[in-house]
Image 1 (tube, rainbow, N blue to C red):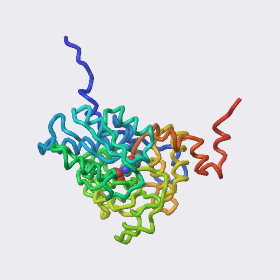
Image 2: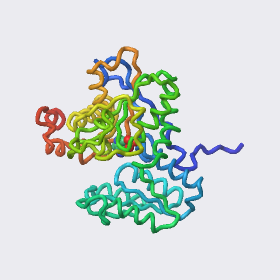
Image 3: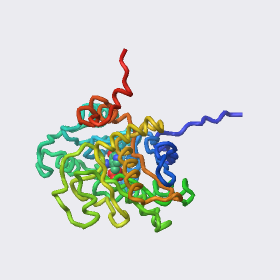
Image 4: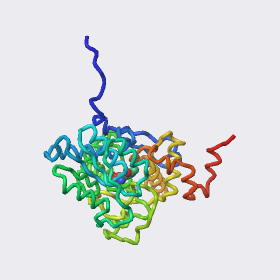
Length: 344
Ligand code: PMP
């Protein structure tokens, strides 16, 4: 008899269907049950694999893309990596216009995945012809058959989560989810997942996470853009200094702001206490859970699902570097270093 080879045809088949993991120890003392949707299990190690695959396959369905065509985006982060990965597998060129602020490691990682990286000056305004927005737009206009992912303003970003993340959580919790906690950047994850879950049960509470220095929470409460909310902060991928159309503010019940410092410590705590080596915004999501809990949002019967967007390995020179933590002043009130690091 012929032996069956148990292999997937390519990595794209492994996108989505990420596990839901119960948080047993870090949630001690909080009312309710807490579960993490661990998106680092995607082959590109983040939730952005879902949107890269969905947007590219929609373009194929519409006949916009054919082999050898080009996919363009403006990010050095998770989305860039996912687009580069999907492009390699499907045979497209990938161009990423990134800011000169991006770390060398990130740029090297994208180049390792075959992407062509255009490094554009960080210190120019978005409408300057040299900005990474302008460069991406120009390349897209000049290249027939190219696709510009444009994740902040692309409804297909939301649709990817409506079609995958939402149904997976509904099924994994057997419909027993009571609260969703998700960080908002483009807003695609929280909006798409929430839209599906609210359709299944409108009582599910959708709890957003925003950064201090970002406009999202204030906009949600007032529907006004308040530029005085904007100042620099360190968490990447969370919050925004503009209002993305990929965020559906109507399906979000409330937002909570979290600090850089507490989110960083919580990310480190997730590794030490749960063995979950996840990124900075996963720390932010659990930090928000603690704060929502302090406000009495949960009870003993709550089933809270948190989205953990990516893997800790992307933050080795930041949150998981003791030197970086010290430089930020994040160890000023804790003696973590002494506990952790013993020199003989
Ligand atoms: N966490 C990380 C690490 C991210 O890169 C992003 C995306 N910007 C988010 C959270 C937020 O996800 P979304 O863009 O879907 O709101």
